[in-house]
Image (cartoon, rainbow, N blue to C red; front, side, top):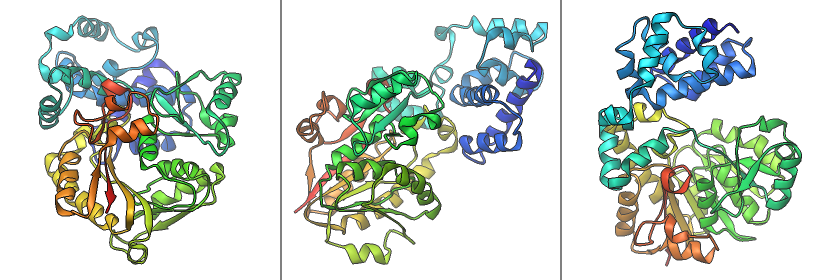
Length: 420
């Protein structure tokens, strides 16, 4: 594609994303379906440019004020991912001079919002939690996330998969915390990899893997993944159970559970039983009350821990939306807790960075349910042989708290209880 045409396409896609009517990844996918002539490199440039603009929206909008021409074109120039010479060949002399001036602006010359690129309400919350680390967190959230894989221990060992990927020219290394994890240096066409096709690996962030590990599901147990979604943690739990026992994958979205089917077929697991629920008080939940050994509640949340992957979320979420989510999270956790038998383990998790969705929900549950004994996460991680497990937790060791700038994972929270 000619440089000018590609830049025009970038501007067109950015304009669609900035309406925030739909998730950015859905907008990008729809754009690609509507423009099937685009090649792999063109698609990569378009997606990366649009996501770069979403990550640094406040900064780019500030810099764009000094330029001329359509706003979306100026944003596309600032966010353009690709060879610099390719981009310059699409610009006129005035645009080249403007871009050069923008590139000479130093971080020290910027106001705080143009450095952190977060809505004010979110910046205040994260600043209150992180203090001197706030800008380091903001910087981390403006970077693309690495590609993490989970080795399916039913199919292969991590050392074997590392060698198999190397033979395919894919460079990977073991993740520092999860015993199942691999981190890739690049983002290859994984669907063509034999390791992926054979079910030896699944795409899953290291933090998400740690949630499954922390549930500590054993052979022969009855386990429920209460908000299974597309089933990433379900598959990790099924492998941890050595394909024995009974693992229920519940979700209120039948559409999301459909995405689990091909992954389940690749995994080789036969102990997983997906089921769509009408709501958290569904009859299936009532029938299983008091019978389950372990329950994972990966609750619907703001998703603000995944901003490296989904930068549009920070512009699409609000304090009001978070307050509504907290009500829903509390109701889901209360219903899921009824499933546990005496001695069973309950794990509540989110991919949020906000205490309202995390510690506040966990403490309220403990106060309302004296029959559930809070389980400190730090000693559990030590018992599960997770290196530096204490560093992954709140200072008191009670909760798992993963931060992108500290741990290189998405932002995750988890609280655990044992039913008396």
